[in-house]
Image (cartoon, rainbow, N blue to C red; front, side):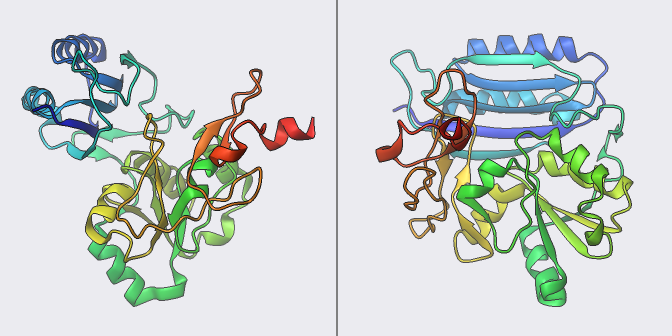
Length: 297
């Protein structure tokens, strides 16, 4: 019986020939009926793939056979389903591309990578170590959301700072503006979905004089696997596929508010105005309501 699964993965490591790895991953993915998105650069690989469990296990054996990817952290989650041809219903196609950055902060010249990963990033904290830090430092600790602001609307760490960002590229401008300089003397814990954005974000913050920067190892995904909804996380986890979001337990709080009527919801959708590319939090009843920008217009 087929079992739909999704894997989330990344590895920061120098790659001499990203194009050759692109062809390998494309051909392997096509042979195994996988769908999803994989990005490569000279600094590593970042991807999410969906397909049948057995196919993904075959992919993983091949992936780990390449020495630079041997120790990559692979995060598994449940897929929605498979179509009649065995392809994931959570992704429209397989896309494997080479880019300047595997996570687009718009600062490829700042990132430094060696065989051990990102150079100069924040200190890694496991979920357990995060709780130890909170026990020791309490209210001193600042959670800093490394995702886009929309993602944080449906789920975030309690009392987290959520920068006003539409894309990851907005972070560099905000950090350079000095708006968060008051945090430079505090313990700052960066967090994101699976950890990759905070690998880069924490290094950018460290380079700008933030003296005590941490990154949540494995991101929200690993934290949720450990503590579910009994810890410091509130709400649902936004994901970039047709699932829209995932919950860590049946007790997940619904903290999102519909932009149309204000009702509690974790649902996100694209603005119905065809000229708009904004996504926002909206319940099914208000699905046809445009985003705030187009309502105002």
